[in-house]
Every structure is written in structure tokens, then in C-alpha cells.
Image (cartoon, rainbow, N blue to C red; front, top):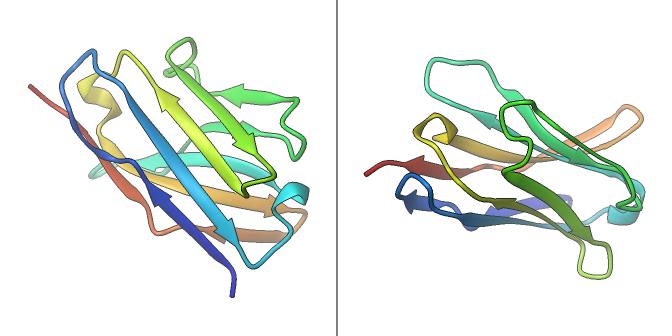
Amino acid sequence: QVQLVESGGGLVQPGGSLRLSCAASGFTFSSYVMSWYRQAPGKERELVADISSGGGSTNYADSVKGRFTISRDNAKNTVYLQMNSLKPDDTALYFCHAKLYSRQRWGQGTQVTVSS
């Protein structure tokens, strides 16, 4: 059974940090491009960051460059998103996404709330 399970979300004060994790199972994780998306209330889902199958290439949304870092551990079938210097605008439901050609998988999401 294909699964993407996110964890690590929560409530954090502005300027704080969180580390999201996404544990994958049921497919060949190391072959897939992995991404983190987010969706805030009333807004469209947007790409936050992605990482190539081998981990050698990453891309970030302009809004998170320099603050977020995506990484993966193919031995553990897990992708991470380290989020530093969090802002209230980062508040959203964060989703893990896996893609290989036309095959796509989504996780259920983990809520991140940045508020004082």
C-alpha cells in the first residue's frame, strides 16, 4: 500500500523553527522526485521545495529561499523540510508529494501554525 505520512507540524512563534518529516512506503522511494507543498486557508496549493531522486538537486519557492531546507534519506525512505525563521505567512497545511513521470502520490498533510 502506497503511503506518505507527514509529521512534525505544530504551533511555533515567529522566528522559530520546525522540522517536517515524510515517511514513504509502498513504492520505490529513491526513484521519485519528492516535494513539499503548502496550502493556506483560501489560497491555492503552492510548491515550497522539491528534491531530485538522488538528492543532488533542489529547488525552492522564492518566499522560502534561505530559510527552508529540503533533504532526503533514501535509506530511510524519508524526506525532510527544515524550516527556520518562520513567519506568520508560513502558516498552512504542508503536504508531501512524490512524482515519477505521470505517477503521483500525496500525503494527508501536517498543519504548521506560526503565531505569537
